[in-house]
Image (cartoon, rainbow, N blue to C red; front, side):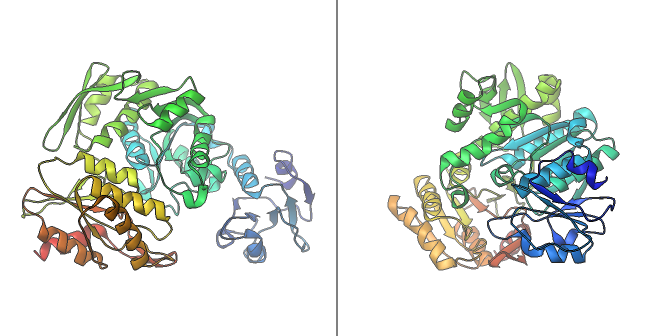
Length: 475
């Protein structure tokens, strides 16, 4: 595309044209820039892209997009904009040809359940429509081909490339996780969402959003930009979303839900329920999984699949790794790996465990969580009579002792049992040894993350499943 053609299709304050090079692609990462690309200097909370303009030019950038005043160099085109993040989205959509308009796009947002809901939808779309793409916490899946993503919700220029790669493989159904950060930072700007799903809202990311109202407003950006909206009516913020968008379709257990789960029966490792008279069986006993599946059922039914067809397909869906995942063992103990990492997610998983056995939870809290977040998780353990084994999980710029003190304060408020063991393998070994046959030992927080962040955001290789198996072997 030519420079002149591009600027006709985007918003800008000023331009300085100094070359006629063909524009190939766009990026806000100077390391990814290639000859002829546009570099957008994004002004972020932690870093300022304007500092990397010279690096981008060295790597071949011929056009620079900026919002703060900078020095110009010869033979480089410059575009001044009011908001560089917004400009990045605009430019990417123009260069890539708005690929989302050629697809059925589902966005999933909420505090808990995004990954499981999105992956269930991905599975059902593959089964019913032949193939699909899934973008989120566990990476990008174009059909069955997986690749890593740096963020739950990648930048718009990466998303558009994924969309076009999907279309090249004749895949025109896509589901993606829409994080609050991704929504507020315009990473999804211009994407043509057919469906926007809201799962729930609870305390998280208040270090970034400051208040729950701000956090909720960020989530609502997805619904504002979706043709059809599907919300959890049992969640207080789902009710608020329904008030804001009166045409929402709803799911839940309450009577007013459009897709309502009734006649719920828990078996040893499965749960049976009805939705609008149709029988469903899911391969989990976790209560929250009913909500994740209801969101997927509502979405696929609105795409045109019958409830009966969805029910049949769901029977063979085994679930996701690290989402209430049983770890095989000969100890007759229920050892579970789960990605739960918020107060509400902890409560939900604790509420799903049978009440006639003891529950142990091995977990830590990230270094970027606030005192209230940690206190609430401590409360959740004590309230549900869970023995907390507090260990390490991404201390980042904080330290284990400080994080643990704040969790213990929440446990002590109510009066619960706990043990401090900094080494995660030692903590798992302790919990498994202490538990009796039939008890539940929950390994929470890490899931499929294959790293631990000990020094800032520096990643050290780590594998939760391998560590759990080592702990089992020690018994």
